[in-house]
Image 1 (cartoon, rainbow, N blue to C red):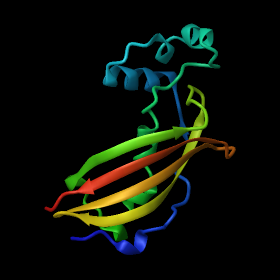
Image 2: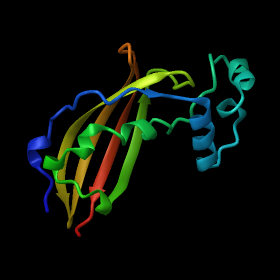
Image 3: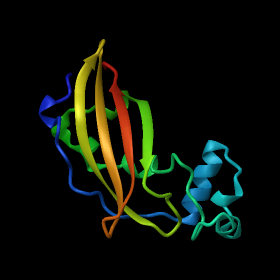
Length: 145
């Protein structure tokens, strides 16, 4: 079933706030196999000029894929058939432990890609005060059932 093309250009309200914790950063760094101490040790992070433990560069995927945009039933996305096609981030500043972030997603394109559906999503990740931290660009591919 095709995704609803009426969603192209739609921007969704900000997500619920997500508090970035040292524990979640460490778990993410462990999951990606990165032993860098600035992801685990506050003193190592501060020695590199950061206010707290630094999140790995791909950490915002945790927040951006939880956007309400993908959960809207009228979009017609079958999550069981989704593969993550592509990801990139454009940073204004790093993500640190203690940040409280929200994401605001915009579906920028939906189109057929062979037998699949391809959806491009731009997500601005901001502090609850409105400071832009980074912009995530995701390509979501839905395979046919």
